[in-house]
Image (cartoon, rainbow, N blue to C red; front, side, top):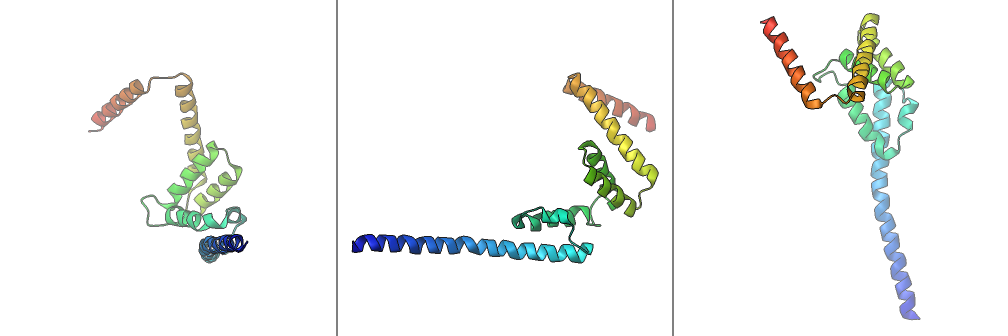
Length: 159
């Protein structure tokens, strides 16, 4: 009986220690989520609900991605180009939330109404030809060879 009580006690202690060990990372995740929410508030002036749809373990990484690429003025692409690309993709997904966001962000970054229209037209052209090429099962190797030939001819003309 004493041996049985010791085994139960050992199990309870081990389980308790295991539970404590699993709680520690959660506190770290909560801290990183709290820091991310504070930074979002400082950067955007509020924390939009879209960020609150993420679990706490994901918010810091998601915010770092947005801040590191989309909001970063020191990347290879300027803000207007990135937002116009976002609009083109959003038009194809389609995502009404993304379309609204990227249209307004593109305007904020200096995009004209004509640039926005052209972005959407380019997205439509790419979608159209993608449908035609994929649906017709055009041979990819032949397509690449013909594309290279076209670009070589255009390059030769421009020299």
